[in-house]
Length: 321
Ligand code: SF4
Ligand code: MG
Image 1 (cartoon, rainbow, N blue to C red):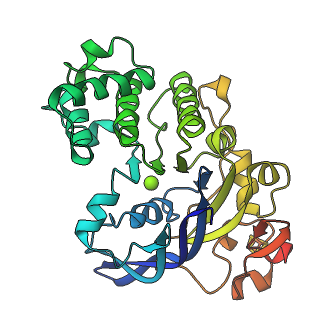
Image 2 (tube, rainbow, N blue to C red):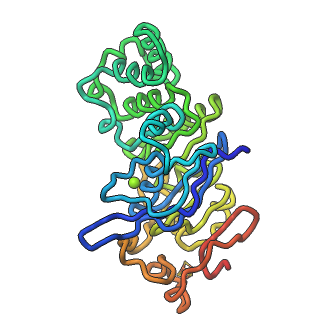
Image 3 (cartoon, rainbow, N blue to C red):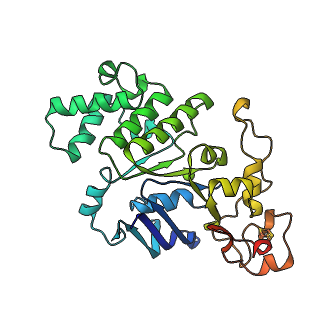
């Protein structure tokens, strides 16, 4: 089988003072070996929570996986022991986040941190781990790595820090890299370089990538396939080209219109009016209805199913079912 990761019927709730509220609502997704999947949506749509749940990193409490299965190469991660998860984290599935400063330890040198990561998974001597760290930094395009390993995170630029994070993530040659808004804090030129780097690593090492972003422009640059999430649900999914050329869901169309222009320092010419509804305020109908110009009576009453509109392209909208 070429399936690397399968998420089935995932439901995640959060415990709040108002009671238990849903954040992710019956999400299905899969990633094949070596594939680059984008998960896109505005903040609050459930995309980060979904990605964190894969490594069982949703803080619990308040988060709780209520239902569903998460299978990595057929192994159920939801019932996996903490010990097993520690083996998988970093070695088979690695993660990078938006602000590397929060994941890098400010009091240790770059070399120290990469060595520690490497030593978690390989029985390397200090000298060998050091050489490995230098090789990894070279691979991610960091100039003068022999010098950089002696520096501290705050001495590097945001783009360099993200390269270091990628070097650390890739140092154990994981099969899956989960990247949550990896370029959002970076300026456009650096953003493009980091996306190039991720594509290179995907091609040279065969690493599958799950890219979480609010920006369909980033998805267009890097991904093979995309899942659009809205208010805890998958609302559209398909190949990147199909989605960009022939978007079906009004929400996806809005996201396409709001792709920032590269030459414009990400100035957004358009943003979808209104906000993602707060979890707990989801009605029975289509959750996008309050913001949808095309909403009909039926939309307010009943949620549409995810329907295949063309081969391997699905949309959850009454207009496409
Ligand atoms: Fe708009 Fe109705 Fe489609 Fe929802 S189901 S996106 S409200 S047209
Ligand atoms: Mg997020």
